[in-house]
Length: 314
Image (cartoon, rainbow, N blue to C red):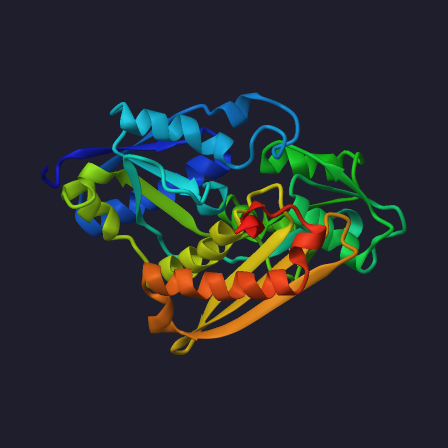
């Protein structure tokens, strides 16, 4: 390859996905001089309707992209990292985690309402069991409804009067310029790797020019924190159907980690918190050790009694 080589970046076709992918494409071009073109790929999750959890979870969005990469239809992929299953995928590796966007959830409500000022029985939409539990824990009288669709279609449910509010990721709203819809930034922990992007390549390309081009946009802190969060999620064997929130943040030479497991109805929860030396979380082995310790505390606190956590069978 040379600087004139065109890299083909596989992406879902939604506005958010193509916006995120173009950000990565532009960063690779700026760092390496290589031209990067988007290849739009339709996933099963983009076509089917119904609950995301019932369709098989977050992996439903990744499968078509990964199949296209392995078939040679593209050279790299960009995903919202929280949408990736935590199990390794044969033949594919994460080549980079670019700088992370904000990790928070955002309430987008009619009339400038906040979570505290939403009326009794207000209709709030989300497709995330984790957000359902957190909403009900704070405001148990809400009428929380399962919704699907892209960011704009969800926001329209509020402007059209179908819902009083929706909860979305701050990162996605800001990336596509919809931050004016935010009426409150919520202070709870969010999904593992929320706000982070994962750039995947074929494992045979990881040490070659494609891999080096992708690695040029890696952010070490974003990578470390996102991978630490995903290590805890993987140890729990919990996916999008489990109400689990995990946040890791770099603080000076340390990383602070918060992990919550909620009952689906928001009536119970257990939390584990750690402050870890950055170097202790910088390796796969270190992250695995932290994850094992955190999960042991969550289980000792009764997490398996009120949440479906397959990993608790260990």
